[in-house]
Length: 169
Image (cartoon, rainbow, N blue to C red):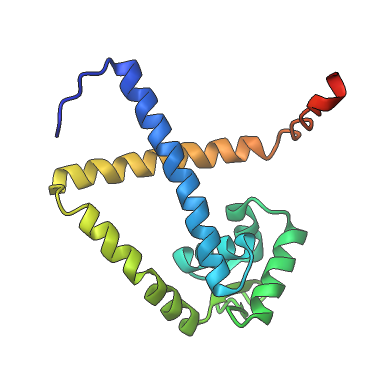
């Protein structure tokens, strides 16, 4: 691993700034993927959550996505109408309804992500197993922090709109 000539504070600031840039690029990437699938970004987030978590209840999906139960019902309805997910009764508890990704949609998403996976594999090629384990640890830790920050952010009222500069003259 390379040594840096920065003090710890400078290095932490550089890590934070680079991580934030990656967050913004991830949002842009997700928006482009949603566009390719013909759905909005919120619905894409729901599709990806179902893809990664398997069958989930609407309540779980709402919690994972940070949406209200009313908003998640609308998202599931749109995704079902688009042929991406379907509702299914839980085999062990018939009162529960699970949201599942259609297998053909999973295959389409995996095909769509193949180029991304190939590019990222090439980007990681120079790292050894210990370094990859460290990267995974970093990503898992920062994801936990971001989930916690998101949970707190949605509880706060929105910031007031910025003042119009022309009104202060």
